[in-house]
Amino acid sequence: MRVELIQRAADVLFDVPEETHGEIITLIDAITEDTETRAPDLAAAFGAWCWLVYTVHGDVIEVLDVGCAR
Image 1 (tube, one colour):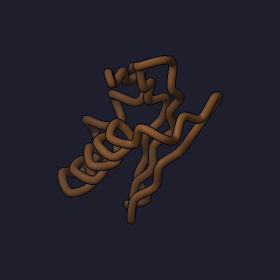
Image 2 (cartoon, one colour; image 1 turned 135 degrees about the horizontal axis):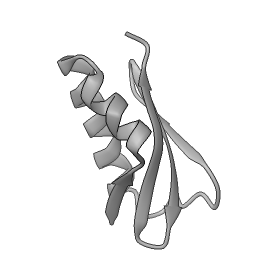
Image 3 (cartoon, helix red, strand yellow; image 1 turned 60 degrees about the vertical axis):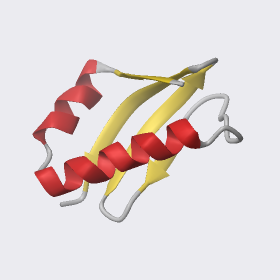
């Protein structure tokens, strides 16, 4: 699977604190390894403090939004 982040999501990813940055990367890794869940429109993944919203187009995961509650 290939992962693409829209610019707004990429900007947030690089502006979050280091400890939450790792959590977002872990969420991205988890959705790339999940071969069974393929939401047709929007899907979300949640960690302890962070979340991301994404969609899947064939073999491309497009991350639309990321955020943290810290």
